[in-house]
Amino acid sequence: MTRTWCITTVTDAARARIALARLAAVSGLPAVERARLASAVSGRLRQCLTKGGTWLLTLDTSGSTAGTARLHAVLTPSADASADGEPPWEVTVSWPEAGGASAVGSVPADPAGPADPPALAEALLGADEDTAVVLDRLAEQEELVAFHREELHQTNQGVLALHAELDAAGRAQREAFAAERAARTEAENARHRLTFLADASAVLTASLNHEEIVRRLPELLVPTYARDVDVWLFDDEDDPRGPTSHPAAAVRAVRTGRPQYAADHPGGLPGVDDHPPSALSPTRPLLCVPLLTRRAPLGVLTLSPPGERWDPDDAVMLIELARRAGIALDNARRFEHNRDIAETLQRALLTELPATPGLSLAARYLPATHGLNIGGDWYDAFRQPDGSLITVIGDVTGHGLHAAVMMSQLRTALRAYAVDGGSPGRLLTRLHRFLHHLQPDLYATAVIARLHPDEPTLTWAAAGHPPPVLRLPDGRVRTLDAKPGAMLGIPLRQDIADHTERLEPGSTLALYTDGLVERRAQGIDPGIERLAAALGSFGSRELEADLEGSADRILHPLLSDSERDDDVCLLLCHLHDRSIPGALRPSGGHRGAEQGHE
Image 1: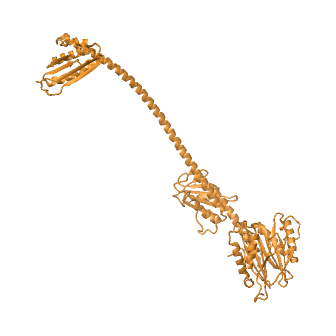
Image 2: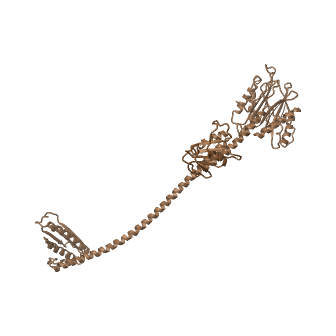
């Protein structure tokens, strides 16, 4: 069914609006959709009236199908309207049918009726009813929106609380990570300090030269732990810098025995006393640490920080290093003092070999290259009343001052016993008893040889000592390895036997200590063979002419292998060959520890 209205005035528009509302209501269009349709058509009609002219509103319900109602509205301008040619405005509404097609067909030809007041009032009330339905629906939606708004608000509050908890957890985690990093950094710094302290202590204690220790201290500390380092030793008389001024804090450190910190700000260093800045260095802090020993302070270690100030843990480490440096310096001073005494004693005991007609003598003594350069190796040569020459070489066990003192006592005792005469074996037997009663816990080895230029025999005896080596005039070399006696001083009664060898003119006898021939990895026999080979490489004329030079040339191949752990002593005795010109010239002499082997 189709209805058409001509609209020219407002009244026409109102009647068409009323007819549209009635038709929609009769057709069963829901109130909300009916209000929406009426509002849309009313708004369009107002636009048409503004433009003027005649407009045609056509309502078509013929498109309805079974179960579905359809209302199609078209608003077009008439041919005389000023808006002629504009496209029509149309709207279509479909909804489930409630009243059926018969209801639509029962609508009168003019559903709006006359435009009298009752009709208008009825249409107005009908519009109000639709508006009330729309408002009710709107209220429901507002309540629903309010409900969802509250839900959203509660959800937002929960999200905000969750975010706050996550933020707090994040801060706690960051703080934990920062604390862990700080702890790891502190542990790494502590490890570096301990490693440095251990390495520096090893360097300082490895040297027994106090000047070397003083030189190494600045090298160890600058620039990581100090910018400048000064070592003030009280009794360092050989300081090339001469008298110098020292900070008041250094003097106070000596008097109190406590570390002192001089600066224009408190140091905050544990165990350290604070003082005003030093007049000698007012612009930089100074840490003055006494170098303490078991007896008295040796000096003061004065340092300036590598930056503005020291870390307290670094200061604790530096104080401990100064303590260890003091002990190292004290040990070095003690070692140097004992070494000087021992070397003085040893040089005093190095025998000036006697000049004996028909015999040449040459001796060498070389201290070990490790430890205290003094030991118990010794040699001696002296004349007996019958004109014979006693030569002796020995080795007291141990090193140091004690061994040197015992060596001197043995040397003195041997000379005293030799005044009464006696063979080499008898002299060694008496030395054995002397040493056993004098020092029961000290032992020695020795070999004594007696030569007489006018007798063709060599008498010798050994007590636990490497055997003598004899070079014959024809160049052959023999090791005199007849059974020796036991070591001197052992708790054993013994009578050491003599041995004799025919000694021809031009023969050379070599007495030596085990430091010359013994090596840990090889033993002693290969060394004796090398000595025999070296002695056999000389000719008789060479030995006659220069026994001193021959001694040096014998030592050179035997000692060129490495550093020595033991002292070396060599005594050469050469019987002149009267058939060689100049052979009757006596000779004697020695080279001791102060010259050594070139």
